[in-house]
Image 1 (cartoon, rainbow, N blue to C red):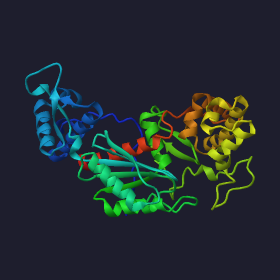
Image 2 (spheres, rainbow, N blue to C red):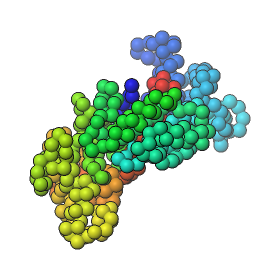
Image 3 (tube, rainbow, N blue to C red):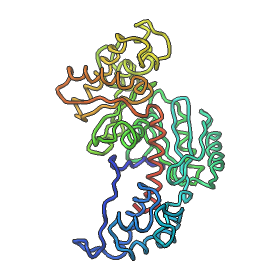
Image 4 (cartoon, rainbow, N blue to C red):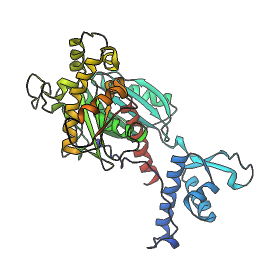
Length: 396
């Protein structure tokens, strides 16, 4: 069975100081205290990079003997190693720089779109080692290409694979749903990866992964609550409230393309989002709007300003309809315009949407442009793969 990505609380990770057993109000067993201290040290090495024993002592508040013990334990477990010497000292044990053994596990992230698929293989620290496009609608060949890519990266096997794909992912089973309009090879690919690879294969909705990336390294770094409005070939939304990704009962939270809105030829149905918000904000709808304003070039150029001010005002009017519905129901405080079109529009389009939004809802809602655009899906998959693998290996 394929698992869904268990996205952690989507806030900045700042390792907290762990006290020794004697200083804790409710003393833990020695083994529990050691495990807590080991996890803290690994989190610090992940967040801060290579550290000396003296730096670990300062950051954790542990005694020198306790730090020496945890360094010995982690090195013996193959999780950390000496990676160099500090610039301040050249002699003595404190001069050694300890870092996580990046080759301990290799990971893969896949960005699977309607008509394309891209894979990246990384080490345990998330550093990319190899990248390639995978054949679409040829599942076995795609798996073979990923296996070859793994060998190109110098790895024998993968520890964790995260697949970002369009469609509904059931929260309980992690299975990719049979979404109308999506090719069946998406689900076949996930099944084949699970069957053939000696790795944990997890799957997550692409927009959810993009939201993870925007929160960690993009436009929402300072936010605990926001909604990512994905603007590309289709439209979607990812909902993050109080630091938690909200999937809904069936994984359908954020299927904003089906939202009934004024300005379409009809109403959406269970089998077709053509009459919903998708008709206004999807790539085809935006291209048609640009053509109405006399622009027939690439739609990204139109959104970037080439189609003129009246077009941008009309587009902002459309996007504000979806954003107003989001604000009225969820009150996220911020909407991030993501995807390829969100990046093309940038801050000027976001400002237009925000101005129009203030006239449609009393709920204060800022609007920001993506910092990542389309690559946010891959970035989110890389982050999720790294954190899932480290959680297993580090015991967190």
